[in-house]
Image 1 (spheres, rainbow, N blue to C red):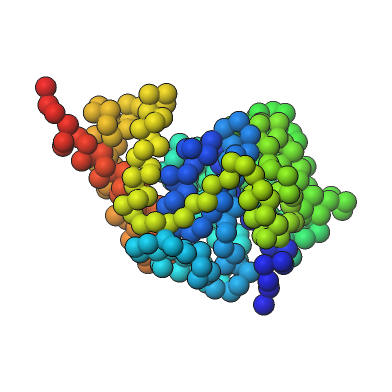
Image 2 (cartoon, one colour):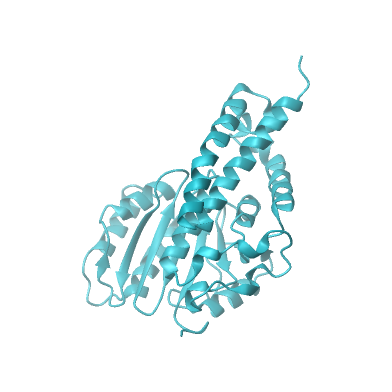
Length: 299
């Protein structure tokens, strides 16, 4: 059985500052370390490592409160790429910013990029650097992360071609170098191929690190609401937010409640905590919007 010092590792890179990411990260219902990674970039490091244990970490919800024990039941025996894909999708589905999941283990490395309700797209490399995926995946990555469609895409395209001198970790390093031009600055110690324990230690060494724990739905919704209220006046999404009282906010709330039912049902059928969390996020947003609309004084 692998251990935490095995070469498996994973991070979630969000194109948003930590204040925006923290409320959504609570909905993953698993322990995370959150730190800044440049202007309007953040990185999440999982505290648990289910893919190296063959079962969900029992301590990933330590002190988590009501309902915490069922947060990662679908992670049993899952490979790291599957876990990261679900987490990235759950984060991105209710957020206006994209999420990039990077992962590696002894035999391969790869990425997953998720944005809104669009289908997550993945790409990977075998340990020796052999490409494994659809070539247009990196074009999709560039578009969703807002990279330069000419210069950055030109530097990403070689990652889809054979290169006997570049192994999987080198490929991930090239991708990170491209993202650095877009403002990403990963903390020291965040190197491709680093084991999960080293990534956690590097995150904890940061002065701005936050521990994200699942504390139950009530606390999670309250945290998200406080963060959204702080940003509303400076956000172009203001007219869509619940307390704006606009027709667009009412329509969006109804759409979110309507969409939450099939998304949650799909997650329950597939035993996927990621999709269940996405459905719960939609439902929470939608009900919050309707509650504000019903309780708002009429002229």
